[in-house]
Length: 304
Length: 311
Image (cartoon, each protein chain N blue to C red):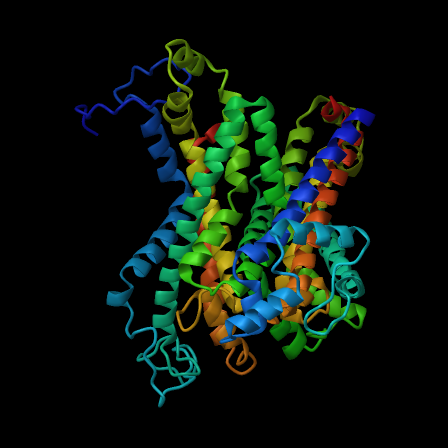
């Protein structure tokens, strides 16, 4: 087990280094940053001056090492827009994004698992079809558009929830539904498939023969085994949710990291964009490693 | 059905040698597939809707009643036909600049489909090459492939696309390239594991024994067997890319205006949503229906080509 963990962590570290390199180079390779910063129609001298000011005239690798050295000490540079330290900007907003991602994941799980279990108990019934239709809808609805519809119906017409901001708990309700509906289909399908598998197994038949109640069989015996793959996908989904928050936070004006990234992109504030990009990637890598370790703990076969 | 069927070319797939039914209609794999397809409701409905949109998109200049940029200042913000103020001159109404919404939707379908289909073909190519190399060679090469896939998976697609587009000037070609480069991971994962499963099968060993080169085995023996799966993935990825493209255009960093896409039409209608909700409803419902249709078709193709894997 220890060898497995060390090996996984080493690979994750390698991926993190690469991802930071990719994130760092993306903005530098996709255009002349100094020219973008100097503004449209700037003279070559002005561009050269800007490049020197931000150290963009140094060799690429030196720039990266310099950045990485500071990043490891928690210094991600300063925003070009308001000169605030980038690390502080991210830290002051990460709570909103994590709250939104975790709530959405919980919403997805709370809706998907009971429906997946129900669907599996009566395969091909109207109930199964209804659950499947909900999954099809969740998979196909454009999140930003669904957000606008939720704002229109529940925010403006019925005035049940605030339509923007992140000051109170109820301003998270609509964004959570909006983001969570996208997570729900894969969890529901996995639960349903897992339950179908388990319900036809011998030990469930034994439990039935013993005369246990349907509820006890479903939730005590079957679900515990069917849910294994859901645990690992949940952590990975959390990573996607952090990355997917850019759109939803913009729609609902939730003051999280996603909105910050969007505003930074609009302001050509590249230290912020690059830091968020790398930050989200690294979080994703960590979450997948955690998922793998949880899985290895639950299912010893994976460790071999 | 006539007895004088044209002989069907043998499928290279190693079909389990089932005893041939001695009935008057030999059930070749292909005929079995067609029969399953004709009974698959989801495939028929999804496929028809998708085909309809493709035809509309292809023949946009002949079908659309107006040009996508034609402005009629006298007829701005007209209601669609089902509201009181609607008229058949503009069945879906007009936008704030007096442009016909139906025409913009039709031309928008063209751009959205062009981007998503081309990008997923690029992604399919990249992903299949990477996945098959990893699956076929295994060992260290496979470790490198897995590592590349992991790096790719950890990049947040929307954020990377937004960041790159904001620095380079946005254009349709650039958008296709970025989306293609960012969405090949699923192809790589699927083709890699399928290649792994297949590489020790008899027909591959036979080809190797007969002296076939690796390139020959990968392209002529393995690839044809993966094609069904790749087609299913392309379909499902087109649906995802339609959503991603719409989101990018909605955020104003997708296809540059005034070119209509379904996402940018929603974005334009957003400001008027509270008194003209149809400006947002129409393109949104269109995206929803098209994506559902493509998903149904993709699932249908999977059921029909690989019925044993049906959930």
